[in-house]
Image (cartoon, rainbow, N blue to C red; front, side, top):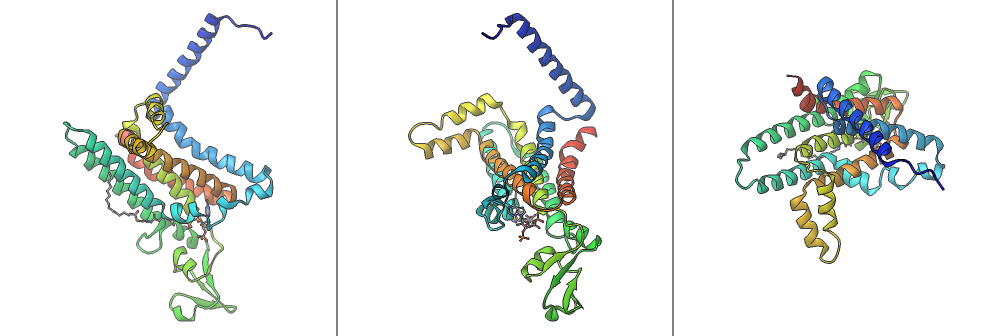
Length: 292
Ligand SMILES: CCCCCCCCCCCCCCCC(=O)SCCNC(=O)CCNC(=O)[C@H](O)C(C)(C)COP(=O)(O)OP(=O)(O)OC[C@H]1O[C@@H](n2cnc3c(N)ncnc32)[C@H](O)[C@@H]1OP(=O)(O)O
């Protein structure tokens, strides 16, 4: 029979651990102005990176190269590749519910600050992945480090391409345009757009929904209400009382897709650069103001 521990001894140990955790949480808040939950979520992307690498190294090849890291998989093509549109839809839905539930309180201030933060996050996403006074930042990093778009036939775009050894090279077209021309993106350091987008979007959603979070037990109660008949009506009801559910589902998908990217695509350095750019704007928008 296993030894039975004295319950009061267990309680004391539990109390001590709890006190330690509380004092860690206090000092984290005082020194770094972030909570344990925020730190855990921020670090979860580094953990994702480590798990992806370990799976890549130690799993069976058939598990590493699976449906979810095929470029044409549904989640990549319809979700990640349109990732900011999904994030936008979820946040609009979230604030629509929040505002509709604040019956007697004015919502103007809440909305104005939420819209300002949304535009700041959108601006950073656009500058990094779409356009930054010409090439987006991720493509600029690539061409500044010696990268080129190489196509077999670039005669029609002579002002953009230079012919070298029968192939056409350009450092003026974006990765998106290069892909459309069926060219290859060669040389240079190519920061991972996927890592950036998935981290940036998850952190943005996390920091937006966090002030409205009522704890896991409330969340569990609302989810448990989904059981039984008439699921669609109950789902609508749950989304109305707990709009965080929509954001959490999207964040779970982003975490999973990030794991696939970490398992299969890009070099370690390229993923780390994507991760740092993903952290950057969120740090400026949500954490930096706490020091002002
Ligand atoms: C309160 C709030 C109020 C709000 C009030 C709003 C008011 C309303 C105003 C509206 C204001 C407008 C706001 C804009 C509204 C939008 O949001 S509309 C815009 C919609 N567009 C999007 O969302 C686009 C999102 N996509 C992107 O940003 C870029 O495509 C990406 C994903 C960053 C590009 O990354 P990339 O260069 O493909 O990434 P990279 O990691 O380098 O990948 C390399 C390769 O590996 C593959 N790969 C990497 N990881 C994976 C993986 N996990 N699985 C499979 N393949 C993978 C990639 O597919 C890629 O392959 P190729 O496609 O090149 O063959």
